View 1 (cartoon, one colour):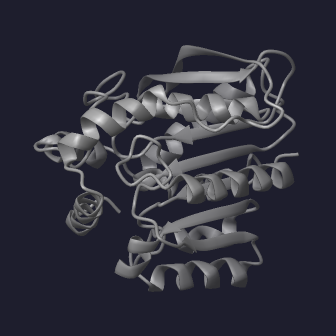
View 2 (cartoon, rainbow, N blue to C red):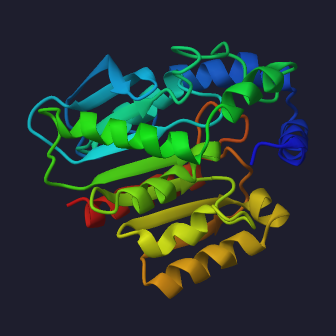
Length: 291
């Protein structure tokens, strides 16, 4: 998860590569946004638009992108703690090019529309954590489910969505647990869940996501950063046992030589090779579970 130990790991990684945090912000993050993601094989033409999705707590500003023709399986894409930003819109477009109708969500819509910090700043910058944490603390397992139910209802009503097919949920960092919670809350609609370097998936709490596995009918991909695993090596075993005991399919893997945040292109620790591996495993999961 995004904590002080993770920050120290990332700072050490940048120093070992001859970079400072400021170097990365000015050279890496902006360059990453300008740089095209790897080309999607057999990419289809897509269209995207900013949308407002009604929820019990107000209208959520989101980005909806989908193939320009036909109806398709839908996927909810939940950003990391930094919130909605151009990087996640780009990831949404890339996923849509593989044939999915993708809703990129602003999880902080209750408090602010659009990005909550400048695009060229991140969690490790001075003062940014103090800005982000109140937004993150405004969310809960309950808001995850009420939001997810509203987004699923909206998606099912869109012409670009094939409502006869089940829906996927992809989360990064703090939203990595959302796929598990939503699959348990809506087992008939959520067919696949993906957690990229997600935090808090198996905890001692009574409402820990891994305890919900018996209520699920979805397949899962849980991609764990190496330094997150070093900090909490028991989590993957608790997850594996929970899925195995419930007879629910899950691919749970620690990705070697990675740090928390490695799947996000504008992260200082983006690991392209391992991010591409994780992306390909996600597509394989969707092909199997959302077909």
